[in-house]
Image 1 (cartoon, rainbow, N blue to C red):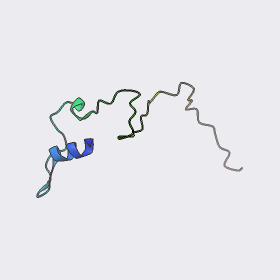
Image 2 (image 1 turned 120 degrees about the horizontal axis):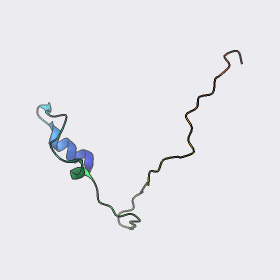
Image 3 (image 1 turned 135 degrees about the vertical axis):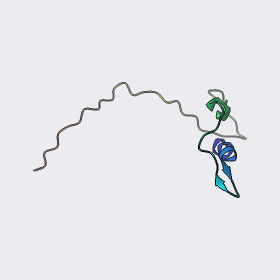
Image 4 (image 1 turned 90 degrees about the vertical axis):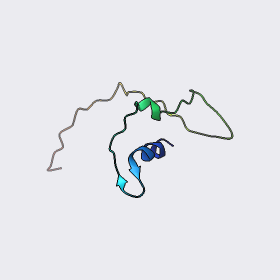
Length: 66
């Protein structure tokens, strides 16, 4: 849905891409689906992104002779 709306504002079927940006606030393209929404008619997955506070980006040295 969002990509179709963005495409309508940036692509013309006859001449192709006419804009790489739109003059709309990004909220214009957001979907307001309440947390915990459930429906038999419109089953959707909801993901809640959270940082992994235990993540470490320490890189182990790999022994090339092994």
